[in-house]
View 1 (cartoon, rainbow, N blue to C red):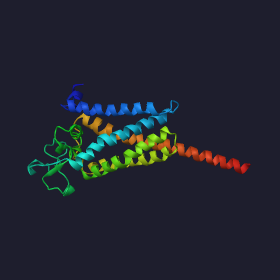
View 2 (view 1 turned 180 degrees about the vertical axis):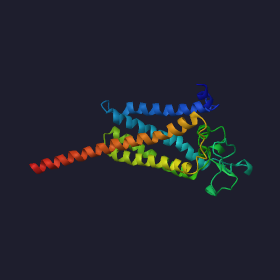
View 3 (view 1 turned 30 degrees about the vertical axis):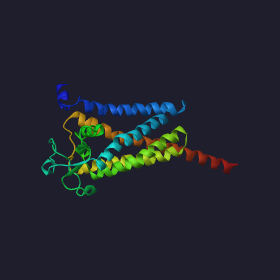
View 4 (view 1 turned 90 degrees about the vertical axis):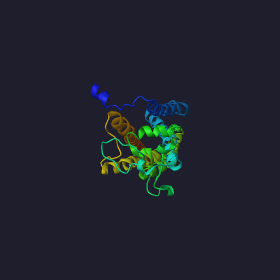
Amino acid sequence: MSSFIDSLPPDLFDKTTLISLASTVVILLAALLLSRLVLDKNTPGSLRFLFIWHAFDALIHFFLEGSFVYLCLFASKAVEKGEIVKGSVLGEAWEGYFPSPYNYLGSAADVVHGAQAAGGDNVFARLWMVYAKADRRWAGVDLTVLSLELLTVFVVGPLCCLVCYDIAKKNARANIVMIILATAEIYGGFMTFCPEWLTGDVNLDTSNWMYLWLYLFFFNTLWVWIPFYSIWYASKDIMDAFRVRSASFSAKKVN
């Protein structure tokens, strides 16, 4: 037990960390409440779950990831070149600013962007700096991550809303959109972490249980397992429709 406690980060129960974790719970509760307001009481449990998931997904994309994109595009400050991290060593604590890519938005080499540049008064910047303790790329600008998040906020988020609308209206189009969304989510997760796997996880801190299993594993694999379930459910529903059509055609031929 003592070894487990020792593995937790010393700032586990600080105010910003607790707010960041609570914000996820609040978003989930909002998605649950929305499902109770708009879904028919006879909606199957599987569809209700998928509605809640896509509502939760949309809110996460718009509010949390949307804030990350905003900070990357509009928060910047000039720093001393010696304060910018030029490299990293696996397993070692890091200090300084995460470097912005060369010529990012036409900025000079001594300008950093993202949550790290926004200052302590920005609540979203503080939340992202908590997550950046596990994956430092989220403190600043990583071009792969930002490119994926732009698609996530402006394409995936609205499509999640479309799925919720279709489920509420009992429109079969939801199956097609769910497959598109789930494929995008799984691909996005791979592209987020594959660069780290290929470079020895230099930007990840897996030194304690919370960073490894809660921030990196749990919060990211949610967008793997549930999209796989979405694909399975939607594909099954589509195949059932094809079977009904085939049976109908067969019956017509007999008649």
